[in-house]
Length: 211
Length: 124
Image (cartoon, rainbow over all chains, first blue to last red; front, side, top):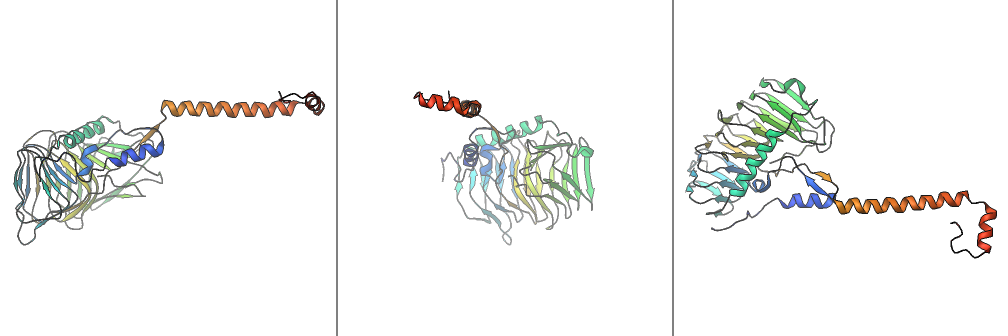
């Protein structure tokens, strides 16, 4: 399929619904906009190399002129429970892929790419939240077979933590809403981001995992 | 929860084993991303959106990703029409309160006198 301009399951309608219910204008410091239609988005002029058993429940998207090596493994094929969207100029090999949806080619992903970049810029511009994870602000978090819990302090805006790196080796990082309904978290990382072993990043207290 | 991996730099690495799990959305506009080990991500990965030449790779035992949908925080700010309606409502309430207060200050004799005179609104 080709020439489509909108994702089949665009989720932006949720924002409208929320605004309507509140009866007022909404201002979100960080929104992912058109990107929310995709579980994995690879920006333009890049490569997706998938030679393992990759599984995605959601849509997979590739920017302009990407190269897709999705040859996978015939014994353990990749699985995509959703659609694949390819912008113009994409070189695609999706051999050994199990796909429940369709492949859309020449599909403009500019709005999704721009939305991600805007969200990242907005997140970076946010100030660290006073009183939130104070001991870890502007430091490196490194956990080896250990764990820490960071408790939310506000529901008025995102709980923002700025760190220089995150390294978990069978470590567990827990974000707890601390009884604050609707608490959200943004972790800005300027350096390395690495998880090995049985590492976990989890939320407790009911915060909904954003995607 | 959003992990915003800023700037250029080392490859974002999610290479834990099958017991590894992550909840959140990963923004890595200027990074490559390496996935392996068979862990799980409940969220999304947006990589290489700002620049070129990056790689998102899934190797050997790969990774399992389930996209849940990010719900952005909405901070409600009243719009001008809402403020106007609110203002009218406050005015009506204040008038009613003033009316009740005024009626409470009238003596019974004065009220009877006004009624006997056929005053349309004997309270005022």
